[in-house]
Length: 248
Image 1 (spheres, rainbow, N blue to C red):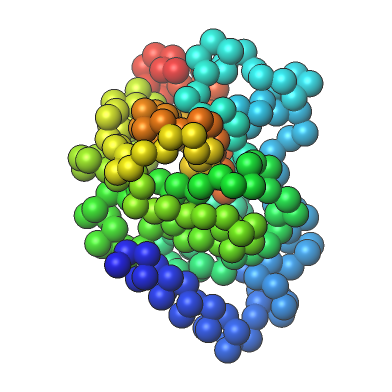
Image 2 (cartoon, rainbow, N blue to C red; image 1 turned 90 degrees about the vertical axis):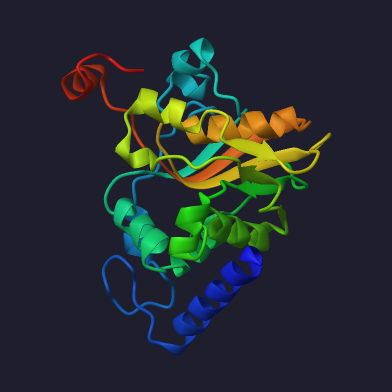
């Protein structure tokens, strides 16, 4: 039922997009695409030398010291952008104000699929109360667009939240980890499957870590992750000012 409802919303957005004059989301100029080429060229992409596990700067593009010391549960991560203006505005509009063509445009811009062609896409489950309030799960809409682009399978019901959690944006980095601990459970076996977790924004990685753990516990052979944007971590001295000590 949730999948049908989300697909219906996406279909309505598609009709609206085709029937009304199209303008670039960022600059407002008349444009056949959701984002014009000049604006697309200025969006904050990750650097060339980034860690393949966390998408943060790393020497020679190798696994960084952070991930060597404390590896994420997933194996590889792809983030299309850094979470900075104006990407923040685009994702917020898509997430809260039905600007779904942004998701379709993102999928269309990716020239290749960086993971297993037979991978199953698992969107991060939205808490039940927030799903009822919003009416759709933005992670599922992103996964649906990526799946259409690369002929992949989406299984939005394979992992569920087994308890309600606080909104992550309200919490510091330690509280985020505690908030989502043991929050997910698989509803089926993933024995031998390659899985790619899908979300809109990665901040600390706590949610994706817990989701990856649940999928591995269900037998997955490999778990990777795909997000629209990666938040750059707060510097150590800024963490001290904000939280009173250097939360990691």
